[in-house]
Length: 254
Image 1 (cartoon, rainbow, N blue to C red):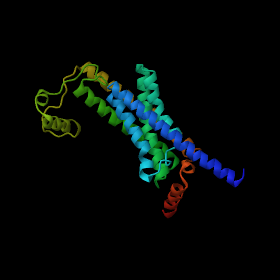
Image 2 (cartoon, rainbow, N blue to C red):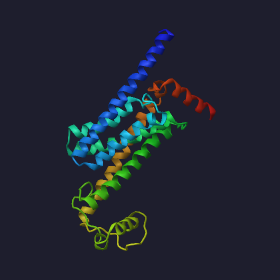
Image 3 (tube, one colour):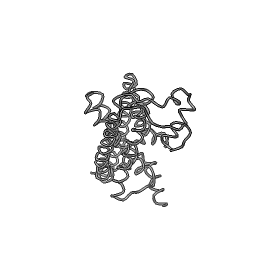
Image 4 (cartoon, rainbow, N blue to C red):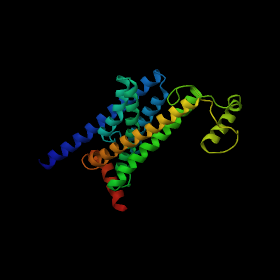
């Protein structure tokens, strides 16, 4: 292929990547709206975080063509679509695990493409696994808070009740109690929830299996990141020329 033909192909690839990436961001936003209509606030949070991470590069560079590889956004969207179209307990759980790993994958690709951070092969996989576990931890805290204060049933089969002195208090008492639960302070004294032991044991068992699943799927996402996004899909070639050159200069200056 001639040099002009290679340049034309490269420009088309950049434009196609940007167009597909923005289409996927729009689809993620639609899923967020659908989840909001269903009052599924946990999934609304997932989709909004994914959409926010996706638009960080174009906002940072003030260029609509500075987008992540469309493949990584497609992976982030797949759990949303699977959950919306095939709403069964198994699909919901599986989609949640993959959504957690997808968010970690998006962060890893953004660091690899748009910053001077460079990772060895083993650390790249480890980073995605640890990011997946960290995201799963945040999700677990959110599910616990939702079960306690909004009487959902993400972890507990029966809605737990907070101590009477906290329930009868106001926002300050609630915040102090949460500090006792998560930080280990002693502002309110008792931190125990009123929940049957069998329900508590089942919730802990579910939570532990959630972390096992998140670890395994995070490992899979880490391998995809290393083998595909770092070796085969060179995201730098899909960036506008000025941004690509700026990133090359920053790397050369290190």
